[in-house]
Image 1 (tube, protein in one colour):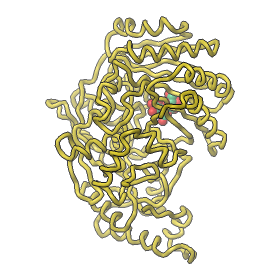
Image 2 (cartoon, rainbow, N blue to C red):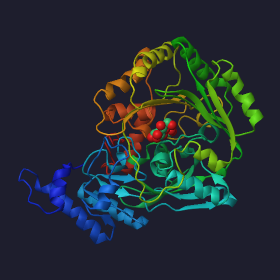
Image 3 (cartoon, rainbow, N blue to C red):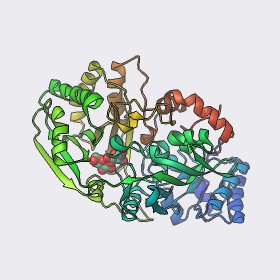
Image 4 (cartoon, protein in one colour):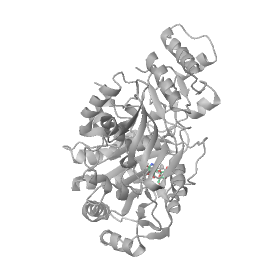
Length: 498
Ligand code: ABL
């Protein structure tokens, strides 16, 4: 069970200041005991309150700061085992941090009082070109992963667009990007994972070794252990590729409804596997953008059936690029990141993974966009990724092959609203909840999935379990019972063992 310590108290404890008698001594004993245990075991740590500690726990989402009891910075698997053993013996909950981009700050626990195992030094990337595989440390960030895979033999894996995201969290819960329609999710490329379990043993999870754990890791990994390294199947980095953007303006709600309806029809049955695309709405523009793996002529033929149903674009760019430039086109900056990576936003976000949108849902979504969202001048966006359909490599994987529960989702929606400075406003929550609600209310008999890699901090544990894992949740609890009955690895939305 997690212990909760107010940050201010922790600071007092850290500098040895006298603390009020209302604080239970057991909490403070645990604090001291975990430090002693880690030190005795030789596990490197950042001392509570030190500059390194403060920087390491600074969340990607500044709206959700939490204070751990301790932060381990292991450089060997044995360190990870020892850290887990210390926490488990003291009844302290453990969270692994790979890049620290969890929208609900799950990498720093999602609540106060966890032992954080910061995996930043597990960042080795080694390609074996002869077998098209790569060993990748769980703390490696995506931009560095992509660059190393490419430089070591022109290889690639499928992953998200932001270069600062750590591969561990991304791969263990999904991993969608502009090669997923062609090659699947990041988790679909995992061949093997080296995992430190709650009992502090280290095992391999693969199709043949601990297959139940392997199933659970690929969709709900944070609840089952600390992955130190992945073995990925790689593919030859495609080049040249077509990188494109079409910008639209819809004069009426009806025109927008028709466009989204056409996109859905196209995604379901026409969109070729080689095409990867998203529809993005923000206060200033509406775009279709993505990557096509093939020739310019083949792209023109592939996109034509969709464009012919849409209004003429205001503007478009269609460019041919090599692999790393293709990634950079969507990375909002350089691919390379450093160990002292320091990027943050203040935001609330939600997701939705519908297997289809009814006409009523599309109409309600567009009405909310035109009538409510357009007058909100904050820096919001909605992304509708063309996730599934007949041509999607994600949907071709059997629904129960991994614990990722959204194989049949036609779209992956992300709703995101942020402020450049200051506190996120309280009216932001109803703003995004209302937009998601426009869809869900129009389809009252549907259970909607959501994507845990866009963890929604406003969901209760029960809501999160249903939305993130749908009908895979009961099996996940059974596997949790087998591997981590005492919930050593947890957060407010994690898998429960009972
Ligand atoms: C995602 O999953 C999306 O694929 C990214 O496009 C998205 O990045 C991140 N998550 C958000 O954390 C954002 C950038 O951070 C924004 O700065 C940018 O405005 C937005 O994409 C639209 O391009």
